[in-house]
Length: 148
Image (cartoon, rainbow, N blue to C red; front, side):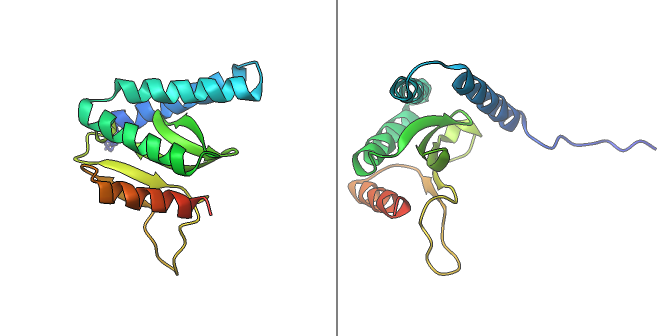
């Protein structure tokens, strides 16, 4: 009797992987100076933010401003179709809009290159529903800690 297989990835996850493949191909095929490529990456990120639903867009714009103000050395670039901020070739943090995977909150996530270590267990993702001044201050502190 043949077993029915269930999809390993959701359609949203497959779409994110397709976006990432497109980002990698686009990055590899671009010619020009490093500064030109960085400007194109930053522009693509801003365009992606502009496409977001109102609530996600407002949070993404604030998160982007906080990161660029507090970690100007991190390079804005898309990562799986989401705004991300890189140190060299490593993604340090990213903003996942709620609409991306149809979740009830957006996410500010940190990858393993972020220096958030605190003992043996520490958080690497934060749910975002709205942003208050206190929340923005907390994000700024996390970003400063993440870059060391």
